[in-house]
Image (cartoon, rainbow, N blue to C red; front, top):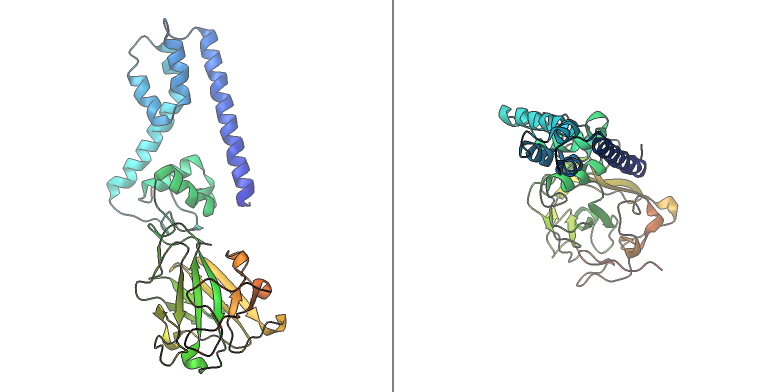
Amino acid sequence: MTTRSRQSLLALSSALLLAACAMGSTLDEEGGGGAGGNTGTSSSSTSTTSTSTSSSTSGQGGDNTGGASSSSTSSTSSTSSTSSTSSSSSSGTNTCAHDVCTAGIKLTMGCGDPCVDTVCLQDSFCCDTEWDLLCVDEAVSFCGVSCGGGGGSPAPGDLVITEIMNNPSGVSDSVGEWFEIYNDTSSPIDLSGLVIRHQANDPQAVHTISQTVMVLSGGYAVLGINANTSVNGNVTVDYQYANAVNLNNTADYLAIETASQVVIDETSYDQVSGLDPDGKSRSLNPNYLTAFDNDTDLRFCEATSPISGGTDLGSPGLGNDNCI
């Protein structure tokens, strides 16, 4: 099921729930439930959230018979939610497969994070099928957690591979290879703990970023084989991965993943596309700075700006050149 269709279903469910509440309210009024003016209070209590309903019901006193009846469903929901949250909290352990800010396999209610319970009570897909990006968004909305740099792992699409120097000419590949990452979120992201994968089908072709590398919102970070500007073509490298990562000259795959192998962004290139730069970086068109548009060579072109103090062309750590 796509995110778009899931959103439509959630919207439809919300509409049906509101209609059901309205019908229940009408029936209560016709049945004369509640003495005096308490019938209107009962209807209002039904349309509030589960927690608010429990509070309102206990505060009405014994003369609101109709109100107690119409709010019984919401009260039951509140009791269930409180029970599951208390159960997970009292255990003191977190057995969740991953945090709520990471898209991945489905999570389990009662695993130790109350936010999982909150989201899954509203959207069972997240605990029945998959914890996808919509579930992450719901965690932000329902629980007030900060994702995409504020806490937890970056979500798919938060980072974008925007530039690749896989074949320098002014210096050798062994010291001059690098690639650039763009932060497409509104918060800073620390790359520490994320994984660079540089061959699609080789489980050994990975490297874990071992130090803090903060990428500001709308900013760039350069990851390279050598951070010494005197030998690498005068490129300022924010993180040196040394010989742990190698970029093939003709065709290759490159990805940034979480420690649990959730792909944040990936791209591949191949000289058969017609893009085969030598001494020039593969530069993503700045009009397409998304993790969707950078999957292949289609939106890339040869860099045209000279690297300051170097001999090759590229814009490491800066906005890319326009593709002509």
